[in-house]
Image 1: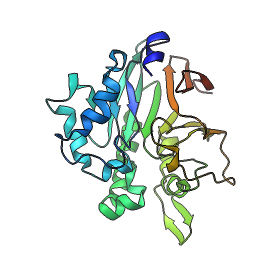
Image 2: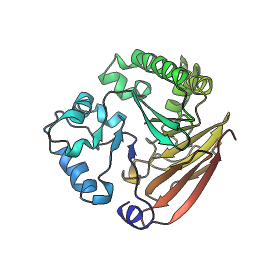
Image 3: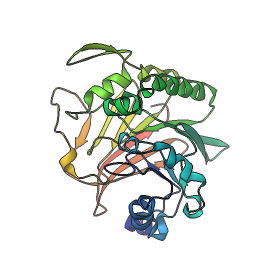
Image 4: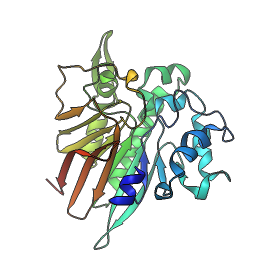
Length: 277
């Protein structure tokens, strides 16, 4: 990442798509994990000392998720670069001609089984999170609307596909029968979302469904031992489960370019999105 930022283009900010700590999140803002897992690893490089826009993942709930929010205003947060003001939040970035791209950070962990077990209120909280997102999207006049969350709505992952179904559909089928889902895809469609970025799966994927581009950027750190294999019956436009790396996104007034970059700096997949395409 530092090499890319040094030789190609420095990021304006970085999206951290959850599971910020592995295998479990910190319990307090004073834990060394913030230093050993983030400051020493990333902020060691001057080029990566930019705002980090953070969202919670399911492994962050194996800990105290509130402390990651509190760290945003903690005195030990270097230059205030760790930015997660709440479980759900928005921010904007300017474009030419007085236009903006608006980002909507969403906590999707209410769809995760072990999170529900540890935090039973999260099952119903997810409905509140969805309604929050619907309101924010409807009130937004942004030129581009991008949602970022931990869990993908579409995935070939063998172990995590049901969570995507639960989030995406108003009703979904699983091994024990049929259950009520969250219907998040309709919220994205009604809100005219352009793209949805997620992590969770320890692979790279992208898929276009109903005009919305879905990008999975989950092979940035976690060991591939945690990848549970492919579900070959699920159709995804593109996936790569052999490399680790990161994703570079460039948003312009008329287009968005998404590049998948491996750890050696090689671009191995590019998606070009034209506005209103």
